[in-house]
Length: 348
Image 1 (cartoon, rainbow, N blue to C red):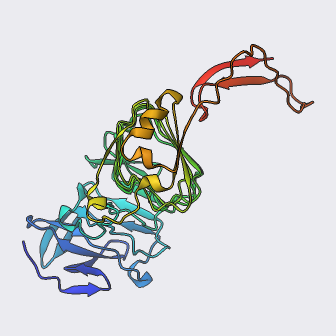
Image 2 (image 1 turned 30 degrees about the horizontal axis):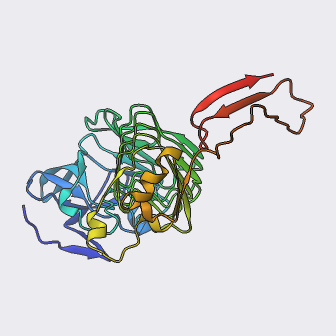
Image 3 (image 1 turned 120 degrees about the vertical axis):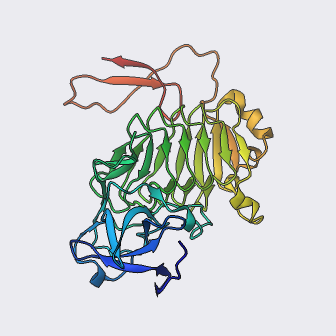
């Protein structure tokens, strides 16, 4: 079905608007190629359209005496929404993003409908066959993909991604300024483009050895310290984009990961790629490999992760300020600067 857009407001276009059971006004588009379904259009930033603090997307919408199933949501759909709307409720009929609307934000390749939304929680009907929600965080039904962590979610300053997650989706953590610590699982294999954007309170992110592929603009903005595990084998030239200042990257991969030219950089020959701001630390035996590898060799500096090798010394002493309330002490030795690989612990 091809229908002329008869309404428009600002950058939002829609075929018609309808009021849900709570009195909120929601704009819709006819879904291209499907005469029985609708796509939720971009949210209008008018408080008069949204009476409640929870936006409930219905399963069925009636227009001109015809019923339509609400299946899709347009790109950046809720980015223009009023801040008083704190919760989003998705119906069991919602099955994904409208591929016909993916041209809105090409620069960072971010196509999530939830990007920069005002929500604290994203909820979905329990009988939805495609998605599920856990504590307001949206996942694929089998929990293998983390779809969206709401921008305004303030409940936690530390978040642990579950062990079932294999991928972090495009735009998943866009713009959340409350997370100070993010713990990734040992199962994670892929970080999609635009996954971690503008996380202003996050000082460090540790990728476990399971992560293999890091796509274009995966990290944008404030990322002072990144730690890559041994498994990273492929990264985009612009996996880190537009850093505010220099950043430290600790990469445990013995062989320098292959760097591929993203379409974002290819279409913009003057773009600053990741190596211009990175101070790189790699395994000592791999320093020469990185110094000769395309892309990596252009980093601001390349130094070994391990401390300098000291020979001819077989004793050492350790001292600390005594804590008189302590009943014992634990001395832990790690084999890496990131303190992810424990060598031994002494309790005394």
